[in-house]
Image (cartoon, rainbow, N blue to C red; front, top):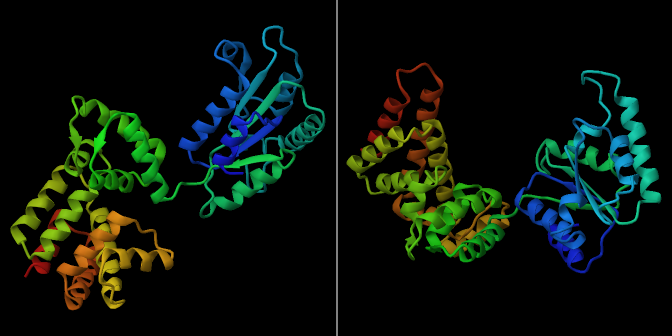
Amino acid sequence: MTPVQFQAQMKRKEIAPAYLFLGAEGYQRARCRAALLDAMLSAEEREEGIARHDLGESSLAEVIDDARALSLFAARRVLLISNAEAALPRQKGDDDDGDGESAEDGAALLAAYLKDPSPGVVLLFDAQRFEFEGDERKKLERVGKFYSAIRETVEMRRIPAEEARVEAKALALKAGVTIEPTALDLLVESLGADLARIAVEIEKLSLYAVGGRTISAEQVSLLVPEARATTIFILVNALGRRDRARGLEILDTLCREGEYLPLALTFLSTQFRLALAAKEAGLRSAGQLQGHFSKAGVAMWGSRAEQIYQTMSRFSKNQLERALELVFTADRDLRSARPDDRIVMERFVLELTA
């Protein structure tokens, strides 16, 4: 089940006796939890109707006992159970403290409870330690298998960049923040499309935007710590113009801001590689570039495509190949014994603008 489907169920008051929130995405998780509480409890009922458990400190048996217990003060109750992964039996290689058998017993107790759940009680198991992508997927599948008795599982997957941009625009409108499209793109990109972090930063920007002030990309780069990518993109533009003085000036800015220079070089490498691939594919617009890379499975959105298109326009094919050779040399030097990262990057700028 997706978070959207879950919220639709809550609006229809179709409430199951237990739910499992699976995955690390935080923004949709908070919205779904709020939707469940709104559907189950009024504002007056929440103080007595909400019970919290942490399976790192409590056992599943204790949770089931609480669910079975009758409350004199609340006709309906919601049990919020965090750290759901802690209830799993230990695997080979884990420190064995004898809890494996009790974990299996807990799963059996949960399955037995769900065959005859307490009326007016909802259990919400929250497993947010692992992601759906990468090596953690198998761990997440193991969590899902352990809680297989729970029929309603809500998958909290990372939100794609385009969907995050739409939601960020809605958040800005709700907060009364007027933000330029390029600034919004920068905010989403620099925060990795993490809506929980985007929501926090928009709340901060709303304090800066008091009085109807419009938020620009430059202001986002100054106010949002993770938005340093815009400074690196300005460096790419300076290198494309062969503006050595400006390139060294921006490099000085990155150093003063404490930018990790190997990371800046990685961004430059990605920018040059994608621009070279776009030039070899004969792409002639940002729209063609976005469609081409999206079909190839490379995450690409409007502002990112426009950045790469500008880089492709400023460099010839030979210049891009030369730039990648210099990136390789600089990366090798950054990994070896050297007096300072800044010296390596200054040499990179000097050679690229020669």
